[in-house]
Image (cartoon, rainbow, N blue to C red):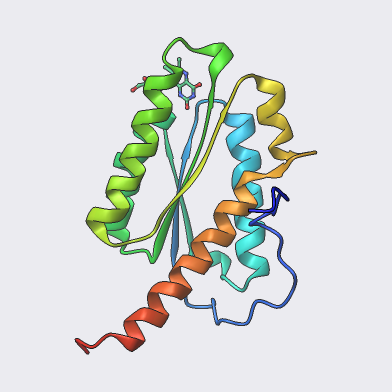
Amino acid sequence: MTGKKKKLSEFNGNYSADASDMRVGVVMSEWNGDITSALLKGAVNTMKNMGVEEKNIHVYHVPGSFELPVGARLLAENLKTDAVICLGCVIKGETKHFEFISGAVANGITKVGLETGIPVIFGVLTTGNYRQAKERAGGKRGNKGDEAGATAVKMIELKRKLQEKSIDK
Ligand code: DLZ
């Protein structure tokens, strides 16, 4: 570790895998909707820049971040998408339940990914206050939605590469 911050979302124009047939589900929380809408914009733009077609991006809403894992599972099972992105924003200053909600969401999202075998991406901001969330949703600290979009495409590519090499084929 050099301590140098690297942005996962930085798209350098050299993405070479064919993403045109990748199908991606997005579950977004309505809680802190102005922030999650900005995350969605970043995720969709990044995926399109990497070659994912807009018609292959399926967006659904859940009431709050706590519902993201179940929403992700429903999408993964019913839409058979190649990956699911979860977008949410939990702000510490606004809820006494911060630790419960953030922990439950992180664990739930991990579990859905492991149980379904479909990459489920953690695009959830967990910040101390609203300003920090704004800064990370298209502000001076980038956009976590961009990061989530790029991660989804890269994980689908990885899964495809390994399926190609699978000894069970
Ligand atoms: C209840 C609640 C609170 C207090 N804060 C947030 C938050 O900061 N971000 C968020 O996405 N959702 C919050 N929620 C809603 C819960 O995620 C959930 O929707 C409700 O508890 C109903 O299960």
